[in-house]
Length: 311
Image (cartoon, rainbow, N blue to C red; front, top):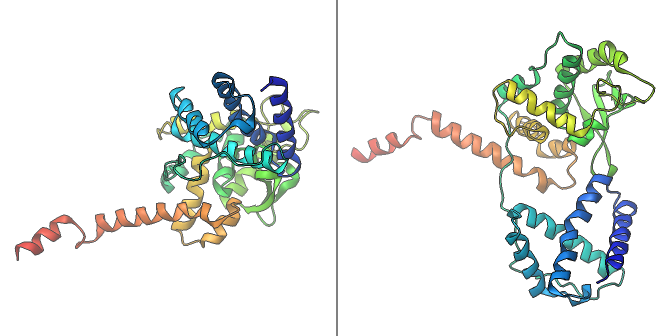
């Protein structure tokens, strides 16, 4: 296949993702990046057209990705992007048949998301220096992420007009530019109010617009900067080195369910399209409950079983 033909297809696919699926630029870029290795593979194998792909060649492609050093999760993600791409190719008439195997396809290993305990989360959000202007900003940032269970892109895109201090609500834009209303508690409310009234005015420039969280130059705080700050304060408080913004989101969901919140309420607050996505957090709380039971119940320990057997 000519490179120009491939590029044209990818550009049209990107337009489809934007116009019909409403995906954000970063998400679209992930899709187009994940299908890119297929073009290289076709060139290596002498596959002239997409219509020449079949289930055997797709399996060979996946094996080739593994040989290149991609971990299983990355290969699964590329396969998911390829599946979406192929559906679009069939819909537009470029392909007439789906070359993906029906069975035996690689599946992502099911792993429970990592989260912080309630005490660890409290330590993390309290870590920024409250006597420093940027510390006050970072305190508000962490409190809001944890209080509302926001994705990093959602807190980055937050604007002043999205905040309702009276109802303690935020209007956020999630995946696919879908809007939802989330709640913040008293601690996040206080931290955010103080930042907006005491710190943000000093950071504002003509280029700030209505962005809530600003950097020291007055620009909107970037996604990378937000992630870096979470890692910084996690290290400062002696927490795990793998704590990131999504860890706070996972912690938010887990702590709500531990406190008795209904699964559907948590689903709505997280912005999950399906309750199946939220369901994974019930596995976490069930695991926690089992561990607590085995540790605390006098008749749950192995010693109790041995005692019974000896009588």
